[in-house]
Image (tube, rainbow, N blue to C red):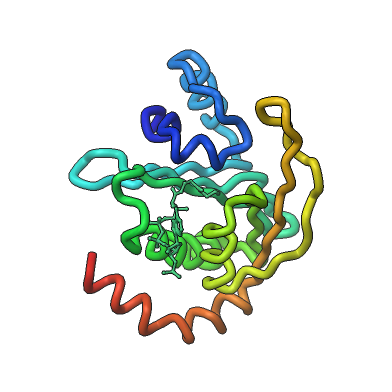
Length: 168
Ligand SMILES: CC(C)(COP(=O)(O)OP(=O)(O)OC[C@H]1O[C@@H](n2cnc3c(N)ncnc32)[C@H](O)[C@@H]1OP(=O)(O)O)[C@@H](O)C(=O)NCCC(=O)NCCS
């Protein structure tokens, strides 16, 4: 997981883009144990980690959470992210019992904003100058989707999801 997170094409799209040390990674892993507000999934292909998906800020009272994901650079741009996004939405509004799923994307990461919109997320706003990175302040785009919006969108996306599943 740490290797993937440290790939330049992954960390340039994250809120922090420094190289993560083994110690920092271990501390983060330790912080997940027993933490009901976070669920982190490693995506496995033949027992290698090829991606990470997380639900964070899980709020069981309001049935909300934030999510984020990244994939091994060599596997990006081939439709895998779209399949993962659909699975995550099914999980969030199914097993995890959420009613609303949110995500935040650095404003320059326009392909990922478009990807989320394809799956039915709408832009709910922009937090200006929200993140400090390398001496610059960056804008963050806030997106969200309700359970009802996903179920509606899922039907429209069925042909695409079937095609991606055949390619996998
Ligand atoms: C976000 C990510 C998981 C998407 O996975 P993916 O496998 O690349 O996604 P797909 O191949 O299904 O592509 C989805 C769409 O995004 C577009 N896309 C993905 N990466 C792109 C890139 N670098 N430049 C331009 N378009 C890109 C694809 O063209 C596709 O568009 P389409 O649906 O109109 O055809 C992956 O690109 C990634 O790990 N990026 C780095 C980390 C990141 O930005 N995470 C999101 C922040 S939470």
